[in-house]
Length: 94
Image 1 (cartoon, rainbow, N blue to C red):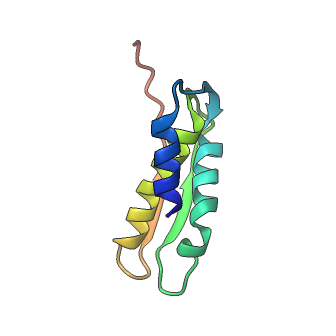
Image 2: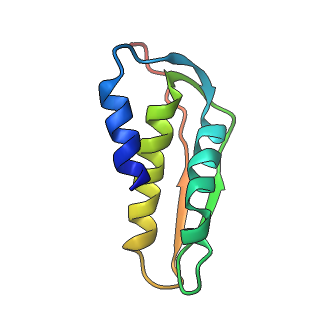
């Protein structure tokens, strides 16, 4: 239900709030939202191995997107399986 509320709030924003954010902190925040699901008996474990990478983004939107992806990965993985989160830095010239 929180995902629907977050999505609704994000969609009604006139202007996104973009600022530099540490990717590891975004993933940590998303994982914290899912902690009860991730540590439930028989659920998949979640590990995060992240280098320090920063991105200019709308933090709230990215946290919601990452939480949604992790939630799906946990729900649809094998019982006792692991969901691993990692980042790759790609120095792309936009």
